[in-house]
Length: 284
Image 1: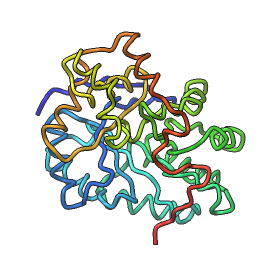
Image 2: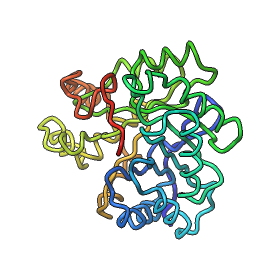
Image 3: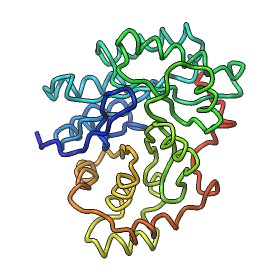
Image 4: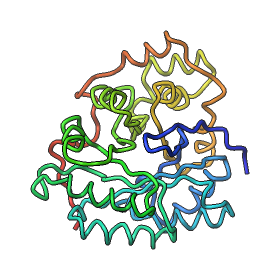
């Protein structure tokens, strides 16, 4: 096993989270255990999955096969969009623990706010997650794809502040308003699609920076995320890339380089994924 060299960041509930993790979005279940196993061999100790990815069982399998102590691997999962009603959320969470074969999760998130579904009542869903934290089965709880208005509603109506908000963020879409709210209210930002699902890899500014630094574009972009203070979890099934994405803590970007990457931000026009204000997908 490689040495774990990723910084841990403090959450608002007193727990910590590794700043770099490994994501399994769109990894086929038959490939998940192998990919996660490779990541664990490289040194990753933070795995991000979700009920809707359909590969929770394989994540748990890989962790057990690696021979690691459960306490040494930080695991996140997320609530399926079809189970927002509190009783459904309770059953879904229990199913996640069964799939992973865990007694607890390090972090459990509401995957999407779905403000046009369930009478817009994501607060009731959040209160179910508060129960999971109180009984110790979720060490930390948070949200994903929440806009500022959604976070403000939780602040007004709920007891627990989310530990994290996992949102789309990359050089073409900084998601700065949501990130700024998080900084002000002690909610850490996690960046999904950190390299815009590959769309930034041919960007001339980033290619030039990577050549200047003797790094890959992906490494430069991941380093940019880390220096912004975000938590990031790139995904790959290629062993060489899994290892490459882990090697971002032995160099840094100066202020000028950070500004060059910041300048690529296109605002809302740079968003690749759905807009959380209107997204209403519920799996069949």
